[in-house]
Image (tube, rainbow, N blue to C red; front, side):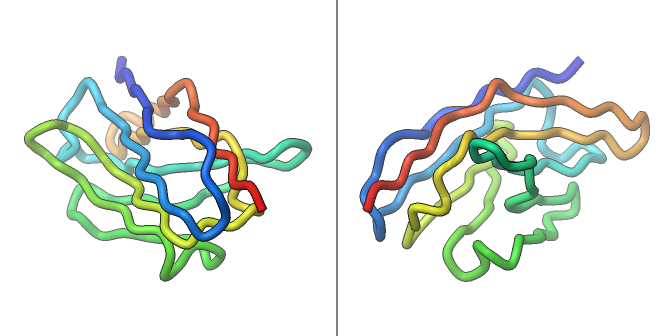
Length: 117
């Protein structure tokens, strides 16, 4: 069982920045993909960005150049730095851990990000 605890959400004005954190109960160097997803009201959950065990990253087109994913393996924490935020970034952001060997799929409780105009 993998536990994920997100933090860092909040209310920010358009153009502002926030940093989300996802603390995992297992090593962030595990054979896994750790990702951030978001779900806005009335919309499906979508991938924002993810990072593989080898450090490679992947971003949704809508956030490329604005969001940056990083990790601190000593703290087993993955960060999502969000800059130049837009109202359309408003959503609940969820951390996900997908184990590549076992197929285990784990989610955090989510953190609300609200971007005002």
